[in-house]
Image (cartoon, rainbow, N blue to C red; front, side, top):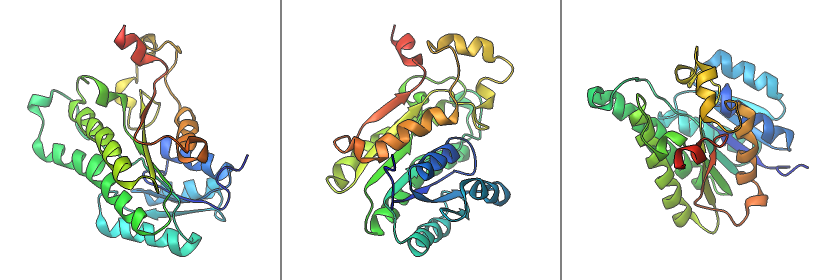
Length: 246
């Protein structure tokens, strides 16, 4: 089923991991994609894996205004416009107690994880035909998150940003978020590496997430199958949240 035939998606932070899995899913369902990332070599390899006829990459940092303009402009020039946006780029450069955190690191996290998502959405909407946005939040934004506290704070803010944008951009544009638990990516290695057997005990599904576990829900929220869904945050967590609640 080609839910995204003749559609164009921009996906930030998509040279690997969840972003690349989302790009792969959208291409498989008919979309053309522009993906972004900081590592030019990884981005080039990702584009090759997706197929250069339907995929293109623009290297740069998510919080850089010139990069953002270049990526949006490239999507319009190469594929004719932007129908869908996935704000997947995120950072968490610190580990440890919030009270000891360097405030410059806090500002960087907020700029990339929250402000940049707003700026990408503004730029994509200004391109003229945007239909749907998915923001990549986190289960860390729903409760206390030891050692990654400010990352969780930024993701909680992203959830609220999702609601605000959904209200302001409706009915033309739907805006939703996903909140994954631990997915096996480079960003999350510190949360499970060397102790995965213990970590998975918190998950009723008895395993950690894989990037493809997030790609399917992302495709749903972007698609017309979710035509009456906006302003929502869907937990993609292997059931971890139900044990927290219990």
